Image (cartoon, rainbow, N blue to C red; front, side, top):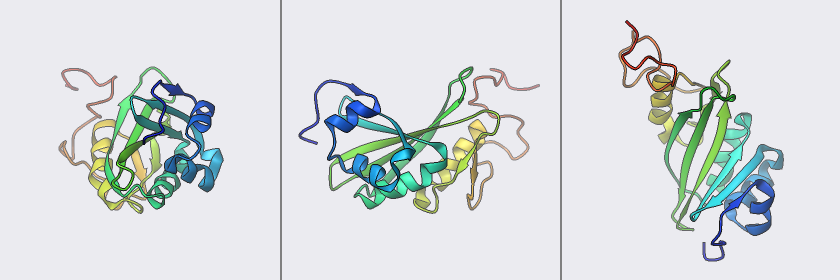
Length: 168
């Protein structure tokens, strides 16, 4: 992205003013402007934060805008903050030669979000990994079950409240 500013831009309004023609920003705003809650452009990478109920539509919007490769997704546990879990989806555009990160948050009281496997089938194993290690459920996932830990394992090892030596 040749016209990107060199300094860090934080916040939705700053990014909208500095990058009004960015394809991912335009795609999400055209699809549902209310889904877009925050943005950060830092070190040449764009992170767009969307509401949890809009994640499937947001990834579909950026896919339609030319972001053609789903790279991966992961989670971060921000205990004791609420919402507790941050989900990050990394999507690449070969056409624009850049990636965009879509980020959303999930509460600990009901750690569930819609699966994006209907848009990106390659998200299947990443969602299973996040489910297995963090306990976040992906509604509509075709085969949501443990992928790394044994089926009878108790707890979710990457949660910050999980005992260092496991449950005994």
